[in-house]
Length: 346
Image (cartoon, rainbow, N blue to C red; front, side, top):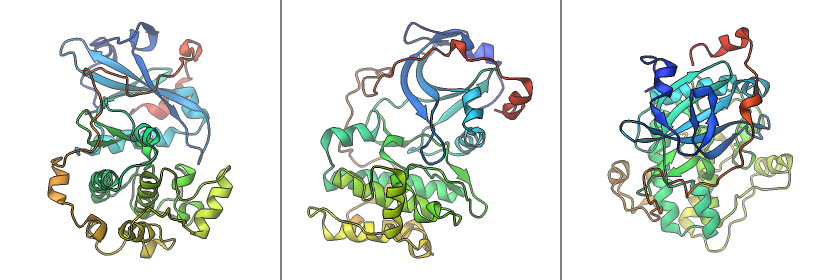
């Protein structure tokens, strides 16, 4: 878990590089670039971070190291999001959620040491196949429901469910990642954040939103997994928003009655009538007839056989991730002490 029982220097020097690139900020060589962290189109644009693979010197374990530029985090007004991600990940522990081990910062960067999930993004498998078979979509939906149910039991709303944020472990089970938009809820929140195609109507209309947005996003995800495209899309975000608010869904012919019924009930514009957001919560979703064959206890224990088993040759295999060109972060200046105060507890 995140903590402060080792100094930054001591902790940083306990890791080895996986690629021979310079990372002066940590006093180690930079690891293999696994991905970039983009600010959401729903709130702002631009790149402010990246994820690297690092290896522990002694035990030789691999981890994902998220590195975020403090000047860019401040410029893009992402301070609260990075604090939210840390606080949420410190609190949760679930087989379908990525684990956080450590956080720290220096005068230029924020660092989050996390579990490395080598199977890659569900997004990549979906794009390569075009669409998933119903049984494949059913498997992933069931594991995602267990993850959402757990988060909601902790009064946490995820707010960023999409194929890019669902990783597969080496066995093929899911791990939700990227908790920058996740938030502990007391009542409702009004922040506009998320990916346009997955935004719930109440988010677009700034009516205040809560757990119901995750069930809406599940409906979008199930549709996309089984169709190969989201139900509401356009060339620009405003066109997408108009279609979401109109609520008209054109289903492909190959979708069966039960899954169409489930999607319709998840994509109800009125959040008070949306499946998952009523009296019985997640149980209403789990009892839907599309899931009639699912053993939910087996799902939560990771006992169901995954439909896709990623090709992973070793613990540090990054072949399931796209590689990104490196920009030179050596030129990023240290931030003033007054700005560092924002991250004093990070």
